[in-house]
Length: 300
Image (cartoon, rainbow, N blue to C red; front, side, top):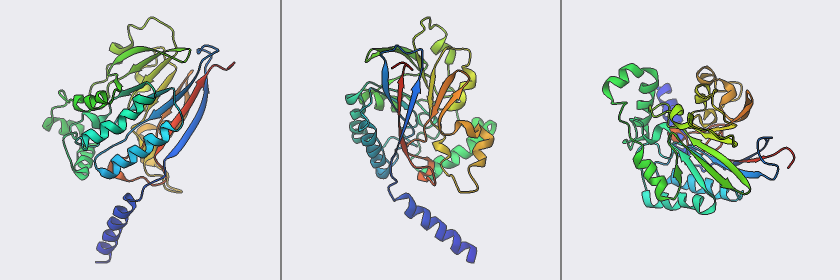
C-alpha cells in the first residue's frame, strides 16, 4: 500500500512538473574555419526536436522561436522531430513556424517522429510504448509494422507551408552575406530514409559544407565525404540528467561525447542540440535550448 501511494505521488508530481514552463536557454558558440572566406561571418541558428503534440508543447515552441529570432540569425537550420505523433493545431503551428523563414533562410530535415510508425498516434504513452518495442525488439516490431513505406510527407508539407526548405537526401548551394555554402540534408536513419551517397556522391565543389541530420551517430557513415559541420539533435541532451547518476544508459548507446554540445571530430565539428521538446514532456537537469553558432574565418 505504501509503495502504491508513493507511485501515485510520483505520477502526480511528474504531471505537475510537466506543466511548469521551463526557461529556454540560449547557447552560443564561436567556430572558426579557414575554409570560409575572410569576409564571411555567419550567425547560424540551430533548433531541434520541437515535439509538438498538445497546446503546451506548441506554446513551448513559440517561446523557443521567439528566443531564437532575438539572436538575429542569418540562416536557420532545423534537425527533426517537429511532432511526437499526429500533427495538431496545424494552422497555428504553420503560423508560428513561418516566422523563421520570414526572418532568415530556413532549412530542415526530418526525424524519426516525423514519419515513424508511431506518427499516426495521438497518445504520448502509446508513442513511448511503440518506441520501447522498436528499439528493444526491432525484429519482432518489424514483423507487425511496414518499415519500408513510412511517410514523413505530411510533416514535410507542414514545413513547406511555412516556407521552410525541406532537404531529404538533397544538397543545395546557399549564398548568404558574402558567403557561399553547401548545405546537405540527410533522410532519417531510423525510419530507413538515410541515403548519404545519393545526397553527396555527386558534389564536385569545395565550398564550406554543413550537413543536417537528426541523429548525430550518422557521422560514422559519412567520414569519406567532404563536410565541415554536422548539425543534429534527437538525444534531447540526455533528457534526464541526475546529480551523481548522469545518463549512463545514453553512454552505452551513443557515447557521452556526442549527446549535447559542440565537439570536434577528426578535422570537423559536430553540434548536437538538446532541443526544445522531449518524449513524454519530461526534462530534468537538461533545459530546452536554442543555439547560435557564429561561424567565421580566423582572420575575421
